[in-house]
Amino acid sequence: MVKCILNNKIVNCYEAFIHISDLTLLRGYGVFDFFRLVGLEPLYFHDHIERFFHSADALRLKCPVGRKKLISMILELIETNNIRNSGIRIVLTGGASETGYSIGDPSLFVINEPINPLPKDYFANGIKLITHEYSRDLPEVKSINYLMGIYKLPEIKKMGALDLLFHWNGKISEVTRSNFFIVDKDDRLITARHGVLKGINRKHVISMAKERYIVEERDLYLEELAGAKEAFITGTTKKVMPVCQVDDILIGNGKPGPTTVQLQKMYEGYTEEFLKTN
Ligand SMILES: Cc1ncc(COP(=O)(O)O)c(C=O)c1O
Image 1 (cartoon, rainbow, N blue to C red):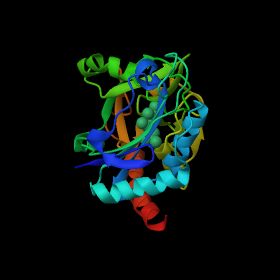
Image 2 (image 1 turned 135 degrees about the vertical axis):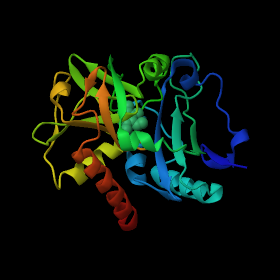
Image 3 (image 1 turned 60 degrees about the horizontal axis):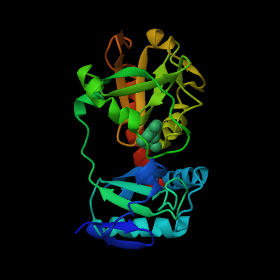
Image 4 (image 1 turned 90 degrees about the horizontal axis):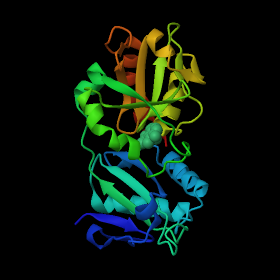
C-alpha cells in the first residue's frame, strides 16, 4: 500500500482526507511544490523545500510542521514507498474555513506519485507552444491554481501544441508549468526576470549555462521570438526541452539548435554531479 504524509504522520493514502470546507477546495487557495527522484535520490531537494516555505509564507499559510521535520518525514516516505524515479508533491491547503473565505488551519499532505516519462521525441525534436495573454496571480508563488492551462487544453491540442506561452503587455513570462528561454542571434540566453515562478531548474540551468554563455534575465518581448535562433523550456520533468515553433513562428530552422542540444547534455552531467556532491 502506497503511503503519503498527512500533517505530521505517514499514513496509507486511503486514510488521507481534507475537510470539505477547506479553502483549497472552495476557493483554490493553497500552495504546493513538486520535485523528482533520481532513483530514490530527491533532486534539488533543499531548493524545493525553501520555495515551498516561501510560497506558504507569501500566502500566510502556516505549515503544521517545520523544515527539519518535513525533510525527515519525506525521506522516510521515499524509503518506505520505494518508488524509483517518482515525483514528490508537497501540498499545503488553506485549511477548513469558518466563513468560506477566511484562512483556517492548513493541512499538509505529501504524495509520492509515479512520473510517466515524457515522449523522447519532445526532447529530440522539440515542441510547439501557443501564446496566450495572461498574467498569473502572484507569479512567484507556486499556487495550486492552474485554471487557465487546464481550461485551454482542448485548444492547445487542436493547434498541435504542447502548452501555452504566457505574455502580458507584450512581455513573455513563462509556460504554464515551465520557464522559457530564447537564444538570440549573438548566442545569448534570455529569460524573463519578473512575473514568473522562479523555477528550480531555471536557476540551475542559468548557473550551469553561465560557464559558457552570456545569460540575461530581463524583460523578454514577443517581437524577439521572430529573431530568436533557438528557444527552450526548463522544468522538473521537462529538464531542458527544445521549442521549435510558437504559434506560426518557426524558431530558427524549426529544429533544436546546437546551444539547446549542448545545454541538454550539460544538464545531464550537471544533475549527476549535483547529486554526487550534495
Ligand atoms: C508556473 C510555473 N513556472 C515554472 C515552473 C518550473 O519550475 P521548476 O523548474 O521548479 O519545475 C513551474 C513548475 O511546475 C510552474 O508551475
